[in-house]
Length: 379
Length: 222
Image (cartoon, rainbow over all chains, first blue to last red):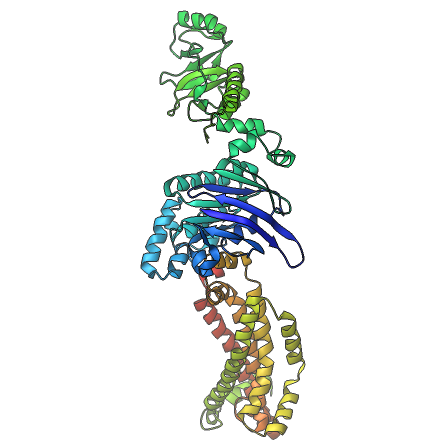
């Protein structure tokens, strides 16, 4: 555990970057420090590996003051990832990754073998090993940065806005990759970002800091979204925190209806019966494998002559039980019929659900949550 | 006689290729003076430039020193030093080193300063000791510029080492000074041509050294 104990950083000109900050960072968790510029989040991170020395207070690593060991020994036990990766442009990818093992005195071959292992772990093709950083895309460079930080298998990983310089699609990929790596390796990760969405997505715990280095709130992301501590946190979370909070409710509780679903080869009687009894204005047509094709008005559907090309789009379905209520609501809002299509992991239709039904599920989920039941995070 | 004829006459004369005043001897002398002066200047300029560049301090003092060094007229300095210390190779080295230190020092300082701070921060954060940061992170990236500084210093030394002849030493300046004294313009032009060729050869050597020592990751295939 990393314990930050009433730490203050005051610069010679009197600026206070961090003000009596106390945080307990649990082992094996991702703790995100988030806040606007000037809130001291990077300074806090850099105090953990002594790139910045606190003016007051102590930082304990597993109960021992971090100042007790030589500074470079401490730093080599903590992976360090920065914005734009900060790769060594004169070294090949494999030698960049091998940096810390080499510092620890490993032989060249062993360090390179380890580096190749890590390239695979972070999703880099082995053919990139002998390339130089300028030959890689921004996203690939950042993966190298993560691999380099992991090379000596440090228990702690410090990440300073690592993904903020890449485009949103690449960023999402890197975030998913980090969560996967974290699930596999169980590192203690301290992650700095100014992006609250990134904080909510990645954080086991999120520390919101405000300008001047004050801790505004320290809570799991679901709690942050449901109970912001004050107006600053609420404001920082943005106007759609209610919607975002739905990410933490699973869609498995939704009751999907199968009545408004007909197969492509349905006979006239089935179409007529489903059209009148299902309560849905449209019927979802699925192909013979059970995959959704689109919505059709029961009056226009002629048995045996359904043309998939003339159906209304079914929009993007949600994966029932795996996706969150947010995805289900999104699917319902975007559907031209107002009904969301739920599929299983293989893309086959499980059932459909109306906006009203999603709304009811949201209300009951909130009621349950207030009743003290923990919201299970669904990402 | 035109210039080409002078050149032809000088290099075509077989007697110019032998003996203590022959071309090989004079070229070797000139190269030796130049190398010694460059080595001395580098021994002063490189360490100071690297360390001040790494710590980012002392830039103003360096600029002042460099300006002063450049303002000193080399020939005037030579006369002064010879008056003071007498004849010999030492007094010749001083003005040459004074000439060469500023470009080496200032370029090295600027080269290290201009290295992207992100990899340096990353290296420090990974627990790399400061000397290793300087030699394994900053120097390889700054090398192109540093070699550029050494190259201009070397070319200036090669062109200026002719002054050794003024104080009775050898080198290619011998041909120019003796030629002028003897009104032997063939000799003057020949000497000047050799100095120019040596300067060009120096450029070629530095080009080759850069190809061999600068990482392809820094050169970016240029």
